[in-house]
Image (cartoon, rainbow, N blue to C red; front, side, top):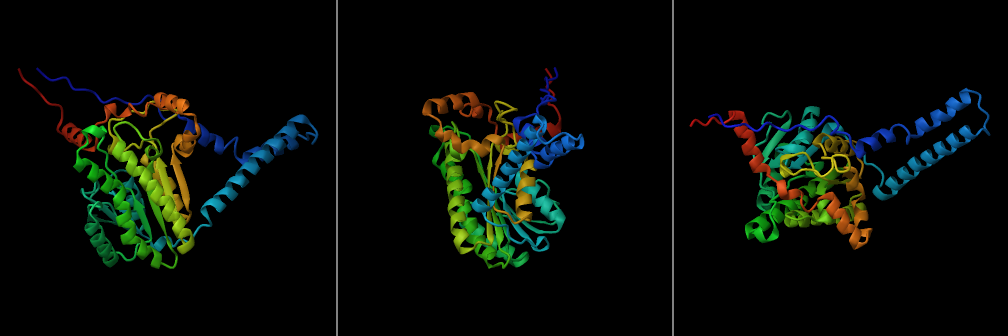
Length: 365
């Protein structure tokens, strides 16, 4: 008898349709000053009088949209400071956890551009022949290995200009099911490693006359917490606090070093394999390529940034303003505390992929 093979499920045709997509379309149409003023010009092209109601409304709307864009630009400049000069031909980029997923995607982009890219990871790269990418086997939770990797990269590629702290692991267990090794490994990899890499690579970045960029990848779970993610959420909360403290220090001591904080919802990588989003419209799964585009843009333009994806990641701070009863309702509606029920994990995902390459199992009675 041939064992029945489970067919892979596919998202429906409207799965990419989300509130983030709607807002993205609005930002380049109805909420863009150019489009708003074009409406005014179209009315005037029809010789409409300035005191006509349609023209007065369109002028007021265009002025409001333009004011919103100007205030947003002023807010960004005050909050994040001016951009630094970037010499794209002389970049040395260090990426932790860059053997797969988001880290590998950013590494490959810069490698193809001709930048010097160093990937630190404990496992082999998914693409072992990525152009322009140097692989350094390194357990970032081990400070001795991080220090040695920093020495090797300085010798091989030169002083780093960009550090992207991307490495993370997920245990996906309830607190009572975590053993002490699980806790130590999670906090060391997800939190302590940021201290180790900053201590090892930041002095080299500071020596550069043009400065550099520090990118920190964190999660909305650092703000919210979630069942079966106590170790992960605690470490991500620490990472966010570390980044903000570092940014405050660098603003006074090294203003030519920019900091980029990337706060993500569920990312489409093996790290959370098996977890289902409760709503593809309000809480879409984030694709690594979308995150990579924003991170690369911030680095290339020498900007300090606070990036949040998807939409709720940019507004998650307001969650704590809600009354506790509404917070509880929001948690229930979002499914944040039940999402890990279908968690499979990176290792199981890799085993499944390996098994699928071998073909379906055949069982004979």
